[in-house]
Length: 570
Image (cartoon, rainbow, N blue to C red; front, top):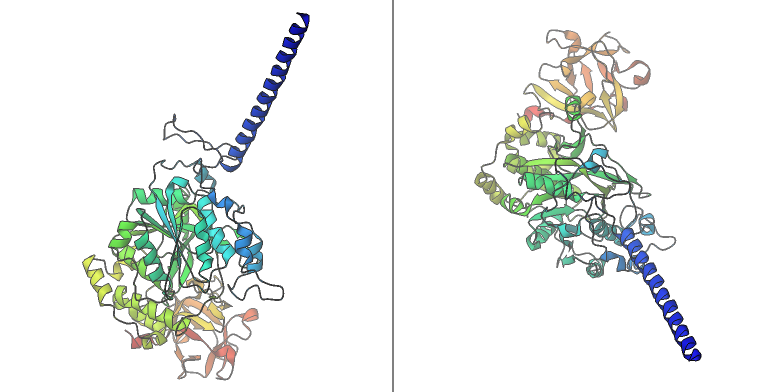
């Protein structure tokens, strides 16, 4: 009897120890699962019970993207994928991509980057039911590491529910596997061209394939930042005819450091129709202080990164399919959007990094200059009306470049009842100065890579030379039919009629003989009318611009307007 009781007690003790062990194991497993969930799925603040007009203060480390961003890329074998095109010892790291591929290949596909947004963006609440987008990325012989990071950054920093698909359009890369192997990642679809088509036709191919109601175009060497997508889609929900772009941060081409870009920049151009960044005017910067994260109206977008409603993209005429390779397409779509009833905006709460290179890594059939001129000329002929003459004055060689048939684009403009280019200049880009009809030459006065510059001086100030910045301002001058060289309402005035005489800025007066200048017959020198004295920069650092005895062989007397012989075009 006693033995039976002992055995029974031993049996109960064993059961207790086994049960306790199972309990402890399960508790540890739950903790591990919770730890994993927290690691890979950052928590989103619960606002379901809050008034949506109330500002939600983010907790530390709280990320306001979707609770479950698509992390399926984590199973992708990035090392094997990248190792197939690695730069070998002794090879040029810049040869294939014109950026440092060695540094790029060192980075993780989901590396951390700094959050460069205005802190106010982190307090914004975006609609929880925003529509999906198809992300379209075209590439030709892109470095595998940058292409992979572009794709992963879209998945890693976007709400999973908002990414319908990532469409990679391979524009006939040398190795089809560059794109094909990425189809192992969730939502990635690869379309490959049977021949080289160029950016515009490749993007249209991707857009036609897309199934989401909103299209997002990215370059193949980008990294999307935190909450980059929601503000873009939110703005299109508010205004379906808005074409929106993120602020484009800089990824250094040498060391791949991620650097924040200024939020005070807008896209613009000069009469040579080359894209440039314009610094916001003081009045606009002041006006934006009350709401620095509101959309920024921009005359032009850089072109590589933007989001647009698919129906609006289709209605607007997609891209000009007769443009080749690259270049001019951002100009054309910017004119078309504004003149045909849409808006172009930069959304400050959206940030995307981009690798900016100093030269193209690929070839252009017929040469990059001719391709760019052909594309740009097509845009000018269709959209710029009589103002295209200023483009031809700035780039006379463009008049000799055939631009093909533009009839379908002209008909598109008529069908959409688009506004004239004069409306665009008056309402969208009033900062772009239109040459006066009295001007025979206009723009920057160039001397190699240096330009004549007021140095910020006004009346009675001297002039000098400064590195050309191609943004007008202190470097914008005009030679008039009245023989004056004007900067706004000030004219170049010779103070003494002898070699070494200093030139100063004074109020323009058509009757002032000290303000009369003329181009020499070879258009190289600017001669003071009535004397053999020419503007010279040789001692400009000590006494400013002055005159010396004219000598055509002296380089410091050579000046060239960016827009010359305007009278032939007016």
